Length: 98
Image 1: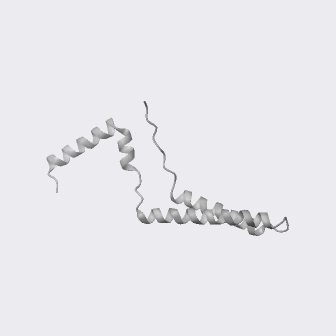
Image 2: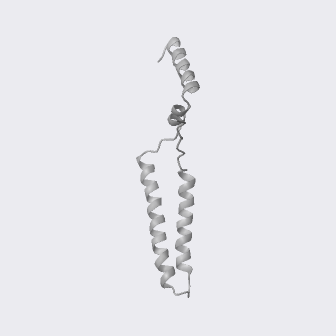
Image 3: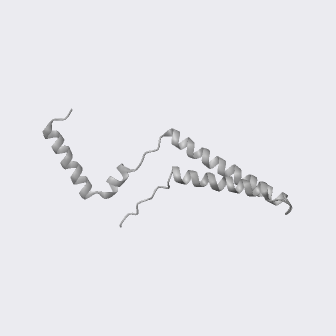
C-alpha cells in the first residue's frame, strides 16, 4: 500500500504524463489482446479465407445454372468479416508529427 505522500506523487506524475505525452497515454490505454483473442481472430480469418476460396469455384463451375452455393459462401465470408470487425476493431496507427 502506498503512503499518502507517495500516492500524491504518483498522481502528479500521471497528470504530467497526460499533459506532455498524448501518444504514450493513447498507447497505454488501448485494449490488450491476449493469446486466446489472437487465435480467435485467426479462426475468423481462416473461415473467411475458406469461404471465399470455395465461393470462386462454386460460381465458376455452376455454369450459370444455380449460383446459390457460391453466393452462400460469399454471404458466410461477409458475415464472418462483419462479426470479426465488430469484435476486433482495427487499430488506429498514430501518425508522427515530424
